[in-house]
Length: 361
Image 1 (cartoon, rainbow, N blue to C red):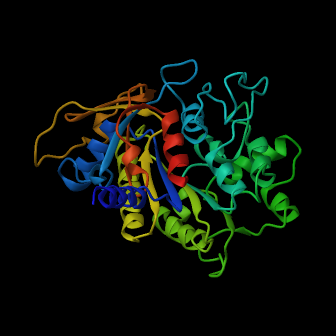
Image 2: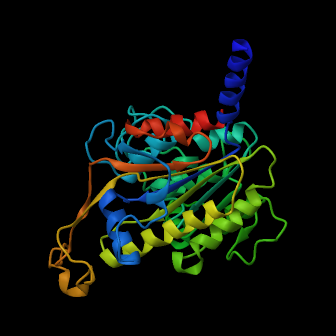
């Protein structure tokens, strides 16, 4: 009887440790704890009403770099998607890189591991598609501002056939950098690579498995609709997929940033409600931002509108104060699905990579 009981326990533990078929990483750029708190108060009138704040497994991630206590998106996202720290401004290269001067060791990303294993991959952002956060998943550059090199890496992958679904803005900014470096435009390079370039979600064929959509600005598409469309395409791969979704939560303009935080939270909620099987859904931030709740009362407005802004760009309202800069405190890691139980306690940002890789098995 004891042997039967032990066998049953082992089988139960094996079943509960099922690997994830899909991993979806939601990245709130500058989405620190205070920003999440303020977004809940602004959008719902109460604390802890975001979907992120209801996810069952919670941890706190350090965001320091290989050389600084305060991270930018390049170093922060590199740690998350490669499991190794680097310097600010460096995209998925090691700490032997010198920003803008010399390359360091190439750091393989979780998206590249997924491509190598035949999974489908996707990147969606409401910031420039070659900006630091999305770029760190598919490119390797010693300078985050080298859009031409980053775009080259998008169309010339080291593993698999490259990112299957990419949706984001920033077309003019990238075309400008390409022109300054005497390289073909986005449209010309895409044609040469034999990849169609779409300018709207509606233009993507319903039976598509791969799509690159690059537009001018983020107001030209719905983040929630883009994620929904991408998941539909990526789910056609029986092996599974990896998807990274970035939502800009910078609160340089306080209300705009908090509204974008609510938008990303609604997108996470909608994604979770799809009921995807064997899917790890994970939220975190690459770094925090200097926004604080310094006052306020129940039932009264959280923000003081334009009156709160000072000449130096900071914000001093009755409830909110903001200094327009990154900060170095820990950020939330929240997760659900297979492998989410590994999210707990304090951790380095490099551990998030390990959690996703272990979930994939």
